[in-house]
Length: 98
Length: 151
Image (cartoon, rainbow over all chains, first blue to last red):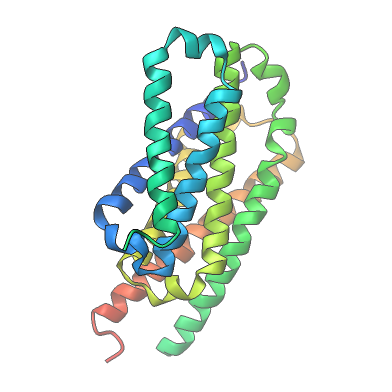
């Protein structure tokens, strides 16, 4: 494999981790804003809900069925966690639970 | 240069940065073809190949959101409340890391040859530097204002 493609793969993986750490920090540091107190917070909630939705679709329609079957706990654990995130950010994006 | 002038330049830079993200995307869409992903990724296992495409797709969407956020919430970023500063700093660090990766991790010899690639690489790196400078510039501006720089 061409070295640049291997490097791009590693860089993309690290960037995904970086984005997820930022999502986590946003939730821990700016929960009131995300819960509907600001336009920016609502935008970020929409983004995070939209970010996770395709991840769920990818897991069930694109990733190999054999891998899912070989790792049922991982498969259902990821599904539950991603669904939770979609619902929480979706509700917050729609105006919170106030 | 007056504070109002600096602010108006930063505002313009932020609008340009928002558009710049879509320029990065336009360049990114050429990467798979120019780097021959189809042939090289065929050597991977099925799952790893799908992971690679999925990760690439996620990165594309993150960059698209940065552009959309910068353009649609321009005033919020310029106002600089705490969450806006966090997001601004995050985008700045995102692009700074990309520049560092380019110089430290991607070997110059690893890039495909040809004048088109050299010019494209140079232009993209310049764009990354402009994006980083803009977002850090907004942070620096708010730091300056909060320090009482306008009083």
